[in-house]
Length: 198
Image 1 (cartoon, one colour):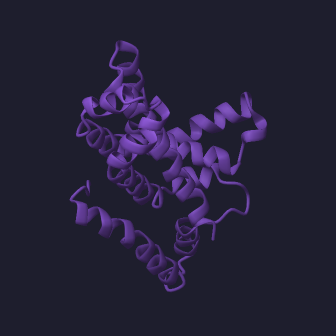
Image 2: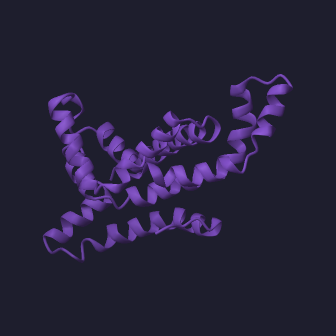
């Protein structure tokens, strides 16, 4: 099963993109950064099948080599669930006073060094919570996976769907239990932090 490859990659990419969006919106507020933040929520309001079909249209017309690749699937999952990572990351960033970063820069540290040694450790919990939320939602995303995944690419969700579509409910029990076990870890961590959302 390729479960961990696609969904963990999407969660990691989403966490990185969410950090960039949260930093732009939180540290450099302007009409442009607010527009970027609002635009990043566009994929979440659409059903996964709509996002997938839009990407199929784009890939077949503009970038045929990307059609039915893992990169396209990861991009779809990231674009679809990005707001789930932006929320916790932005909330964690708001708790870090800009004066702390300014003080570090005033002591001679470069902006990248300030981010690496001060900002990133302080917002790490929010980043991990956002990545876990993205993973939990992406792991159950079936339409986008079925439409965009490469031929022969199987995840636990697609295996469960294949088995149940032929009426093999008993055969789908094992992958279902494995999926529940995998989802239980980030769900437990999120519930401990009190950041679980519907």
